[in-house]
Length: 70
Image 1: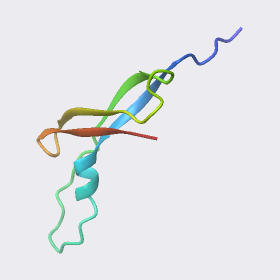
Image 2 (image 1 turned 30 degrees about the vertical axis):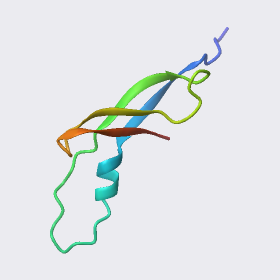
Image 3 (image 1 turned 60 degrees about the vertical axis):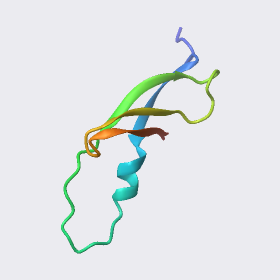
Image 4 (image 1 turned 60 degrees about the horizontal axis):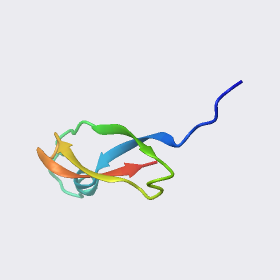
C-alpha cells in the first residue's frame, strides 16, 4: 500500500533581486545570468505561508532574500 504524502514537501527558492533586474529595457546587451535556485523542504502544517530565507546569490554576489516559487 502506498503511503500518503505527509507533512513535508520540497520547495524551490529564487532570488528576489535578480527577478527585478531581469526586465530592463536598456540598449546595452544584458549579462547572461545563470538561473540559480535553492531547494529545501518545509512542513506544510507548521508553515502554510510562502517561505522566505536569506541566502547567497552568485548573480548578485551578495546575500539576498530568496522567496518560495511554485
